[in-house]
Length: 264
Image (cartoon, rainbow, N blue to C red; front, side, top):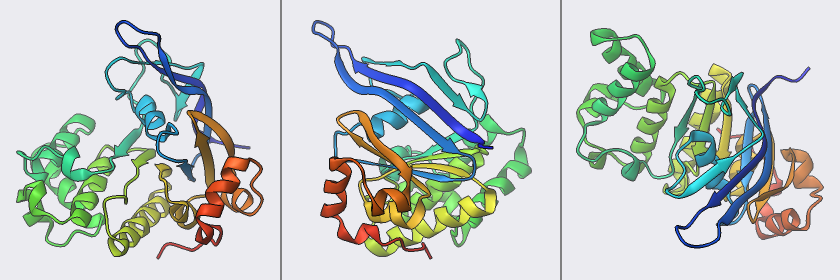
């Protein structure tokens, strides 16, 4: 018996210019993620990966319109006129531009706690400290007082993950979370996501252009091209016997991805 955390059917996104024909971006996208698993979405730049996440999180750019037949997140129907808050949170690609540079890290975290939990005062502060500790940040009290530019790229990304976890998600959505990091820090962040996913039984949807990330972290993979899904399946099956020519071309361009490596 399957237990999907996310079901999307017939997702279309168009850009509607003021005095021109609409420009299709996503075409009839279907996506299912089973609870407690990690789904990777891959494809070249412009394939629609990030737009898929933006449509899911309702943060589409100006003049973009979304239409879908079905979107269920942990049982919440996002196609309803006034849906309840779905149990999901997002980790953005570049935390330096995602954080407000004029606010300390603690201010960002406290706002999430106020918005998504009933904790206040000292309890809220302790929740923020605990979240930073859980993502491997030493001296979390100092980091709470720091501005985003005072932290390294890896520390900012850890703080961004902590902020997402404070929203108590069942589904964690990540948009290229390691792109702006060097190879050593990238491996650390992947290992962190892997550990948190296992400890919390999180479901994860991660967009990446790096097939090595998919091989290391994901259970399932969805391949996108020109705004449409061309292939989806278990990582081992897709990497060992890709059915679509575009998938084969991606794997040929990244030969090391076919060897699954455990994040550590």
